[in-house]
Image 1 (cartoon, rainbow, N blue to C red):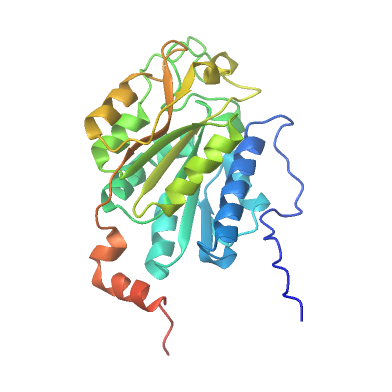
Image 2 (cartoon, rainbow, N blue to C red):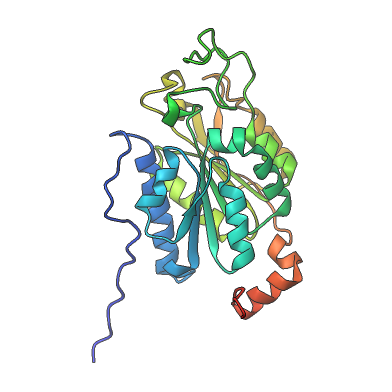
Length: 283
């Protein structure tokens, strides 16, 4: 009998996509679907081995467009939800999707602690440097001088440099991507998922409606080789400060190291991994 043909994994859903036409989130969605599809075809994992978490925002609507199990959380709370899923079943590949507002404002404490926990999961940040779902208020990465309805005289505070923060907090995989480069972003996401430990992937993207003065940052982007040197990583993180359209923006794997994960360090979770099992309710 002829061998049965393997069915192509259906990564997308049939839900109507309601992002603005031309939004960079379409590109990020394509990159994520490509990366997951490739990992499944390679036999690295099965579709049911994934779980995703999101919070609130334009970025978080990606939950509706990816055919994976998961959980919609509160604003800024995607990461602790993901860690909770890993505690329930440490064998799952958890992907948390957040925006720069939800992560770097409301969820900043969760980012710091998840970095130091080194839970084996992947964080994907959609960074357009504004709260775009709620009329473009400035976020922690918004450049100085940006005018909005809440700050008509312009943002006076210096922006946060997330790469410097996560490096200082102990993240073991730090990467930055350009949403316009779908193939490269797919490659980085694939590496992040395969990484044993907490993987931070920030994707710089344009918004068509708000903070348009920071659009086309991709013209400053240049690709770097995968890096495992901490001092070099810190140097890369200093090249662009999120405050201007000057200087170069390195994209790629900024830093990677391998140390024991949270799940490997905690005996009950390590045993579940070895048994390829999960917590079960016992009456």
